[in-house]
Length: 609
Ligand code: AGP
Image 1 (cartoon, rainbow, N blue to C red):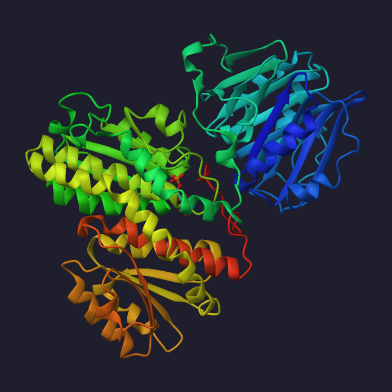
Image 2 (cartoon, helix red, strand yellow):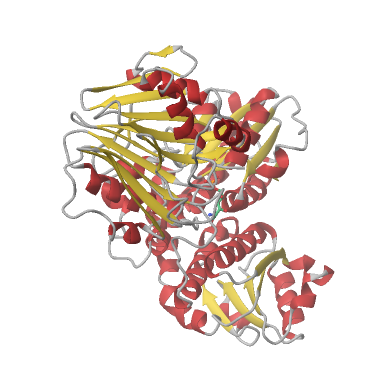
């Protein structure tokens, strides 16, 4: 997945493009480039590596260009190199692209046979070549772009600049996200709103099949199939995000900042969905009577969001006595899913743009299910296509490894469980009030837990050389074991497996030797004795135990390291047990010198299949 940004207006464009690319770098960072209007035509700078490498190549002083576009790449077709970096230019047409052109070989062969010459190995380069083909047939730029778009199969968010039409940018959208920003006599496009937050908070999220033409004098939106899209003013959203939310504010990494924001983000998410005077969930913005009609839930997501869904399934079944199935989106979408009458489909997605989750959501909708999405980005595709939306109030999450979005997702799932429980008569108002009060007191417990960070770093220092980890948990903390393993492997590149503690003897126990750190999530709940037995099994085979617990005394002679967490209601332990695992992964990765915010091979939102 890549990041694209464009500017047209009265300011010098290069600083805006570079700042935008810096804010998009978490989406992909193996090469970058910009294109800008100069007196002679289109100037281009491209570099393998990160934005900093590109900045070394920029002309000094910056050209007075007031129109430009930029790109930061996560390679799909063609190795990371300056030659394959975007923008791709053909005869006065410059293009940046996020997505995949699935039929590019066929198009490339056809264009080569017509005499077009290609410089790169990318799929993207067919786009400027197609536009040039139609410009040479005499079509004006907008029509040439529409004609070219008609050939493209796959997903794309494209920024285009044509020499033939100075101080104008074009944007095309199908399948990959693209936000339009509105300033004073200046307009922007970007793969996500955070890239242009310093300049505006007013956005329209483009829809599939739309083409945008923007100049300093105004912006038009229309459909590539010819249907004119009247500028639907109410579609302009104003986000309450601030530029500082997308800066590190003194932290070494975004991930560490976002881990430490969780006491606030959980509290803010709760505020949006609880009636504090009643100490109960509010109506969650859902239609009256909707929850009573639900007979079954299907929760579908990827990665960390999937782990949140697993926690939710335990909680909803416990508080609401409602059957819940949880599925990985990339599996769900291809297994001819069963959606019985009364099933509510819930997607969970921080970005709202994950291709597999969107496809699963669309499949459920196509089969007639009601669709609710739990999402963190206002106006994202998932939020626009769902029937109902519950927003996590985590603010922009920049670190590729998801942390604050995860605890905010869990927060909404807990509130949903209470709401279902009350509506279905499975939970008394008194119990619901007690649980809500416990949720509302979480911020303090999270703050206490965050203070373990200093005690975790010395533990991390002893573990950076480990060749592999095992994470164990039971019941509601089994998904937390999975999440801890994912956090570690995705930012430190150390293999890590999460498994239900009771499952260890069915295979994973073979992994244990004197070098294997075993992280055990062991809060004192009704499964505590069972997990103590699992710890004994590990110790008997020489494994090293790192225990996350609120009963340190019980583990004093069993664990090699103990990370103490506060006492909370057993059903709420995931909120305090996940934080030490986030911090452990962070410190190990940072000590190893890994690129914590932009781990290799990963992207923040996987907008391609
Ligand atoms: C989490 O740390 C990962 N970056 C990844 O698993 C992520 O949770 C997954 O790609 C889903 O993303 P989404 O929530 O934006 O759909």
